[in-house]
Length: 384
Ligand code: SMG
Ligand code: MG
Image (cartoon, rainbow, N blue to C red):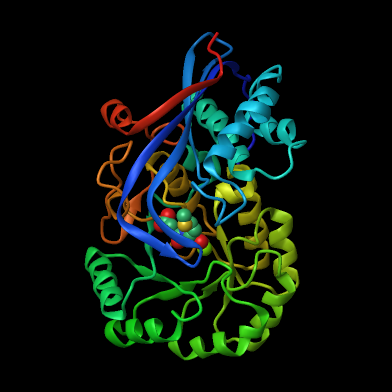
């Protein structure tokens, strides 16, 4: 993996803009922690100058939600910590390089989604400056990736079957059902019975406790690919105990906040599969380290999703093209989320999305769409 940029000149920071965009979801997304109707997303736009005097732009998306329910981060807080702490720390660097961002911001505890956005906007500008696509920089081995889709909780089982049937007709290669206590064995049974041998998995978003182990083991007869994050984020021993009583492989999402967390979870038998979300772990550089830890341990990984706009989605597709990403991700087509996205939409082709090939993340916002969706713009570092 060539994830360092030591061999090229750093950039000089000219300005950093925080742009908030509001995107209504095509259908509400219900999980064990609530129902989302829209995304209030934070985009970052970096202006920088190369050593040889060229001006370059970088783009990134912060994946925090409106509310601190999936994680402790939320979009207003992310923008605030970027404004007060992260951007000034980066602006104080003598020169900008992606791998300097994490050390420069390490004094700030947590706020990984905000840190990821800041690191990614530097990474994007840097790779654009040197005309290197992110996928190639990360060591991608494929030019398209297998896509799954995450299906929210519905009011009734027939409604769920309609939604799943629609996604299968669109070509998705894997279905993930959100579950919670009271919505688990029956919907899984119904989907398995109706659609037969599809690739099927479930995600509980921490909704169960250790005492639910015997109940969760009732999912075993349905041959699920995995059960994602059944227990609280900080309960690795509980996941290890659950993995001993369930046949279904345990996959972790919320618990995996770093490469060290991944190594620990694997070593203690708390998971046998890992969902990698760059935002949750502080950025693409840490995501690559998690990929490498998992690959060394023979643990398959897949790319999670945070209802990203095309800006975040483009970068995730580059990550998902790395060799260890052997399972379909939550990298769904743009139209599964939004009727109008900030970039040219990503469309499914035979259940796959193409990995962008242009420099950096490989996509730009469409000016008209961006203007229509924007709710506020703020220079967190005034342009100079
Ligand atoms: O981007 O398709 C997507 C969403 C995938 O289910 C998804 N994400 O726990 O994995 C997860 C959830 C959390 C995010 S909901 C905002
Ligand atoms: Mg999850």
